[in-house]
Image 1 (cartoon, helix red, strand yellow):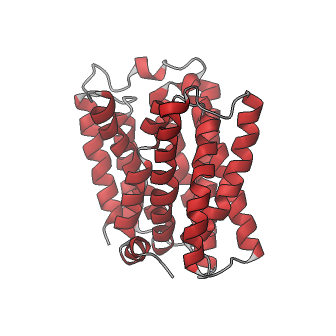
Image 2 (cartoon, one colour):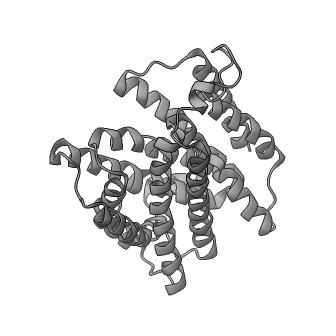
Length: 302
């Protein structure tokens, strides 16, 4: 039995995936407000969401096969590693490049789709370079309005870009594998609902992030309040609302199309930066947002 929002996502998968990406786009601003380390943020995402996902999974009415459950736990562990690699890459690459590199997941997903013999629509292939160009402009790596096509200030912002790129590629690989595995679970067995799969994947996320957080010496944000409050809101928006919509939608879309629709996330993160932190986008970023949005629209067309 699917809840009404998830039934909507399966009937309108493009819109469902975009709304899911909108929900998870607030993860970075909320994590920033909490002041917690990446591992603690990830730990709270899994631990806070788990009881809600458990209750919602019961409504789906089917127990997953042992193999599907093991794959979901593995996917959750990969998700935790994705977030950890991303946050490690930030000081090495600088914030802008660290935002761009993990979105290479579209190529990881496309590679696995090709290996599986899945046909990718021509419009999605056409949309990839436009979406990536828009993302580069959004991150100010490419800034045609800033006196040069390539922004050397942004490219040289990190302490060790070469190592940072490796961490960023690691994040892209782990997230791409997470998307591939969760799609496989959703399409391989109709008995595995999105909440059931996310409940099991939360176990993997909790295990990996707990180990990393424990090694870092802390399991809590530096300030319990409002830090914990921001983390609870983050968990509810991303793990209980956003990812169920994404996981319900993606099985009904070509792999690369679903992957491109997740590019809505950096667009909405830009909007959140304006509304919450008062960050004013440059003309180049606004142009990049329009190009990125256009690429997503092309990919989303039926």
